[in-house]
Image 1 (cartoon, rainbow over the protein chains, first blue to last red):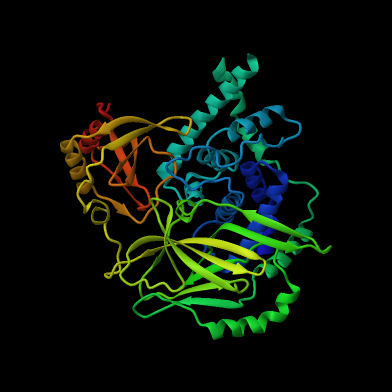
Image 2: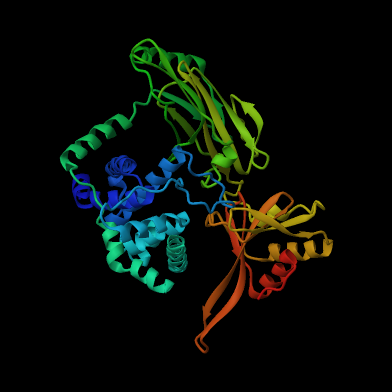
Length: 167
Length: 338
């Protein structure tokens, strides 16, 4: 496939993935563009070991991390991190008209980054465990256990959210 | 009642609605044109090289006439082009290219109306900036090439102490004979428009071409006698001190277990925060407690409590046996592992 074909096939998915990760439309647009610049320049290195889509998504993921790094939203301290790597400004309303979906998204954004990533890839983008492992560079078993823990945490967030709302 | 709420939210339908959030009104051909243009701009012309080279040792070769030559040649371009951010820097070793992290910089851009804008960025020291990055592995026969987007008028290279975040030494030439392990550097370069620092780390292979094992790197010296302070992770990002190991016998046992266990080298572990951490001879150990499920053919799932450990900056990890896990847990926390 040429990069243009890849762009036409996947740009909306890539944009969506980035948007859910960064929570800002303008930024998502920029990072999508940056991702496809990388896709274009490194397409000759693609060995076909993974699906195009997972390859592009991992490139998008790298671009997101680059962006956060540039913005200094990440401090590279593995032993201390658990704050979401994104800033804590409440994310944009992603879907204008569906309140439940917006609330779901807001609850996802309150999770730590690794949980957000795994939920977006496994649940929203319905990647397989294997594909998710490729994108995140994790082992299959780590993807499984993290997905499980992430969903538990998300349930808790939703319950908290509902309790806050109710009180 | 709460369960119902989360069920209502966590439906496949809602997740798939989230995926449907795409952008509207974007003309794909226009975007593609932009990408085409942008990628031409990004493949910057190579104007200047600093070469770290040698057959037996690594050197920074600084050749003044060579630089002047190049600067002279590119002078025409420079007069007309100013950069809006510090130039990019790439480091090439063999087939690999890395882009160091841009750290602190100060950059002045002339505006069209005769005024100018100063951009400055402050950053963490290189060992902190690079904490989550694998170092580039180099051996003494490698040649390192530094490629700047625009030639600097001067530069220096600093080596950083990784535990105290202090500059160890400043060089124009680095003689890197007899070094091993992971080293942190930054290169500070100055242009007419400003100064920028770029951070990178290198891991030097030892003579046999392989990494020295953790046991040699970390545990070859005896205990410095400093109390081993154990901290427990708390939800709000903080660690609380929960134990202090002062008994030499306990430390001895701990050391025996850590030397005995099989360390997996060269892998940076998960960046989730560890449950506990402690410092032995200024090496910070992160400890995770988890339940390992083992499927045995004759029985059902066997679950055992295990400790996994990483040592900060050492790119390694290990998981202790069931028995050793419980011994170490008790030393570290003062409680039984259940």
